[in-house]
Length: 609
Ligand code: GDP
Ligand code: MG
Image (tube, rainbow, N blue to C red; front, side, top):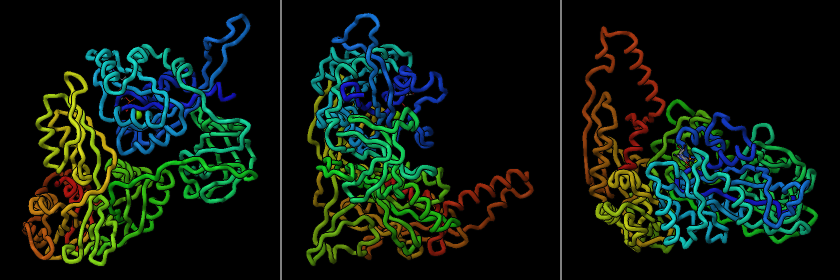
């Protein structure tokens, strides 16, 4: 396959607009997978992806497709040429836009999928700009035209007014009924340019992703930008200078399929005896050891937006959690991990995530794939504090601040984001109110068409992390769509809010909040905690404090009755169920001082803004 017969493209879209289903259909159409293989969203391989119905990891598949181009000799006996197509299915959720931008680096074009009924949504906008800024060819696909409320003409008008895309370029499809799908691959071949690399240049491969396989070791996904890779070649990493041998190379078709050679412009996998994914740095350039090359531009490093502590729940130990985390981070290099100690919770880890969903998914994978039981502390965003000696520090854990920062801190900054919100126009009022409660500053307010408003806000990241999306959804009956990108830091009046149980501060429950909101947040935190902490054999006082000032207080009175007393004489199964439930709950308990705290306590804290 010379580069002229190769096309590399991504499918990008807002969540649920049909990327993974469209990918299924294209894999079937090219007989890469069997029709009716019984597993929709074939490329969503992780259990979390299947349960949540979302794509978390970008996945590549190679397809072969015969296509007759216009310039072809149509005379008899001449076969139309077979093209090699690399399709990358990407996640739609904002937390994973890092996966999207990495995928785009291996592509020359995208299918921009838009739901024919919902029209352009916030992540459509974000993904469009990722592709546009990367100078990729954009093929608009209006999908789900089978729906009764589909309105493709309206979507065409939106594509024109928002992105200046020619409405006549849009393909109309239904990934469900199959209508219009036959136009997709011809459009990919005719409109998207072949990869620009040179076969006769020295080998340069871009390392796109890596994961750990029990049998093969580290598997790297690569895009061959220039040159040719053959099995057995000696290769080196530009980032680490280490050398390896290409032991097994091939394509994802859709499973790993050895080919012995990877040509210019191809996307494939390489197994080279790397022992840990730490050696496989995403964005690295791999080249032939015998040559010297100019490294490829690579990627901006992933930016961690939220941090939280991870601790073993009672009954599971630190070493087991350590092992599970090490294994999982082999497959998700976008999490940052450092060890930390908490007075309340003992030995644990401070983890940096790309967003809350990313954090949730990481927890779920730890439990499902590695059987770890964890307690996670309230997420925080990375603040910057300047101390009186002039030093500036990024604070990823509120517990590391002195209780009364006012004494030593001269200034603080908090991270902000640029938020894009798209809503039906009748919800404009409530959304503006919500955004200003969340300390947002409106930058733009316009209309996509007669029914939809488009707003841009600069907002403190913290206000978005704390349950913003749920609230936005609820005040707009689910119609709002939302996306954000990180922006600069802004100076802000921040204080540390401590929680005390029976007079003892619990370091793992400290948060940093805006001074203006501190009293209300303190009050609400204490009330929430009262609801989720079970009564115990003694009275518990819960307090919120700023420095030495108590701003809220609640008491949980001591338990009188045995938990089984209500079942006395009752049937045995019910009693057993109750005991089991209690045991189940215990897994996620942590004793702090003498008080048993359930995981929900930390979850509830997260919902207070
Ligand atoms: P993704 O988040 O963009 O990957 O979206 P999925 O491919 O997971 O699809 C989201 C939902 O839309 C699934 O329930 C699909 O079955 C459904 N869906 C996808 N394409 C179509 C279509 O053309 N018509 C209809 N009616 N539903 C579709
Ligand atoms: Mg998907």
